[in-house]
Length: 419
Image (tube, rainbow, N blue to C red; front, top):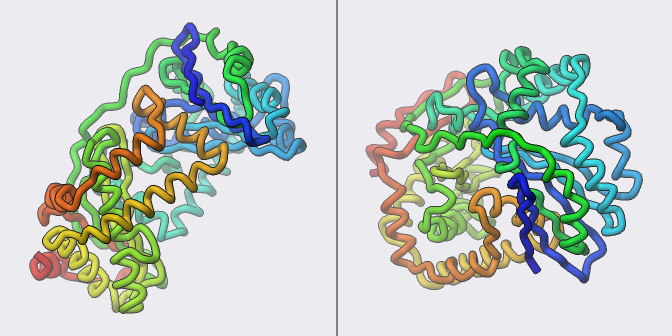
């Protein structure tokens, strides 16, 4: 049972009551992330996420860490390009404690200058760790090149220079201008009572800040074919094209495309590149969706001497799907797999809370799994072919490789042969 309540200042509370469990999950979702960061503020959204755990007026950092762990609960947070979430999962009887801790962090964090300086080093080490992980770094690089200088392409963690330049004043200014009531959704799922939750969260209706500006939409993307040198054993590669915004009706055929191409062990790319040719251990496709746009891409990691062959295989599989389409049997199987993944993913209260928060923050309403499945079931073979023709166009294809500095390839010749 889903219910929604809007507090006097515009903060939204959305709940799902699940009587047959003994747990509850709560998330405070804020509609801001790295995409809203202006020059000099890069990485501040993620940094603030860290600082919320560094002590409040009544709890030390250690007490915040121990507060829910001592009752078997979990508390954590994450930042994306368009949102930040602080969440907890506990037994139903401990939900009041979780609300108290999260609200204490949200309203009473100290942002102590000494802690800020200490945390800068922690985040910079996190950045360095990420840069030493090429199979993750390449996705940030691809996004950066795809979106040029638009904030959408900048790394969520920021860079060392901007982290060094963060101050308490910048942090407080960012919170004042971005953590506004209109941008906050509190999602709760599990063995709960909606009216009790609204009552316990009443303090979130007592603060007011000026309504935040929306994100600048329609970033100007670019097509590129680029090699980046790095001391690695493997070559990491991404091939991609501009994708779709979150409310695009073609998202459902794209879900089918992603599943068939690289969504699992039975996908075309996995079977062809790993199982048949033995050219890669990791190969998959994905779609990153944002408010108004997206990126559809294929990743693979392979040996330098096999890189060109893997690129050609990926291009061939995408061209085959575009030109020849798929069978009704493939479509049926893809729908069943996506449907199964969706429902299995909602077996936990944390997953249900996450869906509540994300859909309310993104769409202004809760979209049920049943609604998604209904739209998915309507996708036809013709729809899939039409969306492939819409997205997969030679002039839109970007290629990025990350690895050995002496690697050279003629991407234009490969593209000419593929198309």
